[in-house]
Image (cartoon, rainbow, N blue to C red; front, side, top):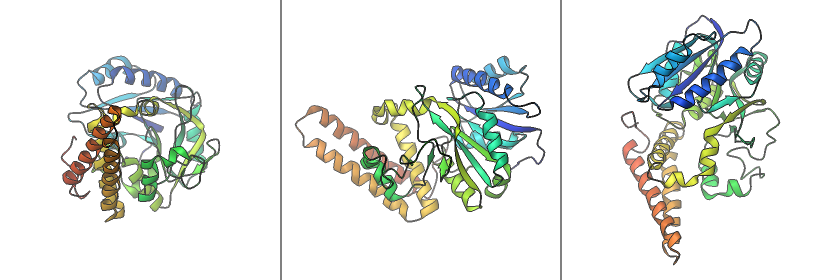
Length: 340
């Protein structure tokens, strides 16, 4: 790991890209405007890491943003390294005191970046800071969450977390019982906005490369807390996150042909995470999903409703995907060859 000791900037904002040229352009325009709002003497740089895009994203960034008053540097990966791998490269190249990982579908509300830096300065024991994520309509998205456990995953899988969001028990996974207007210590924050203290990374290392996508920020937050740093949620740092509302709106994506690989990737990372952090509980994570989706498949297949027959096929696909993920990761022991 090459984390440079000198701090040429107060913050390095790292944006990764993969075949989303127009969204990256929009993101950088908004980001540079936010950087320009920083107080005098608080300098920022932008680091763009492109994951072997075929749509000319890296060329566009160099062509349109190379003369910006805020430095914008582009690094090209010649293979897709995934979320964690691309951000690792960005963090290694960055020259800021703080490192902010920002999704290309995330947009600051005015003044949010300055507030986040102030919070980090005021809390020297904070290793990671997260924002209040909202949809374009202003609706709150779960931003500060609790670590995975078999029990919490079961709550989400069965829908109990959505049915009883205000319960301290059933609302635990996403802390939906908590007041989103109150700052809090949390287990982990969403990678769409992920502000890191260098001193914490020196102790923890970067994202674990076994995770191509999913669970990498959860795993890193576990290591940050184990190193005696805090993970904080800040409600006054507001960021609009488009991606979160897309999945919320179209849950059928999980069962579509286009989304089936995403489901497989999530399952692989789930097994890798459990094996790394909880050992034999990877077996429980596997059977939790296989058992639940198998039961739902049988219940729907017994119905005379043709729509539920289609649901039965979808649940069968979920069972097949988890079995495939178990085989490909050897029960969470190995990461399949990347890119996934």
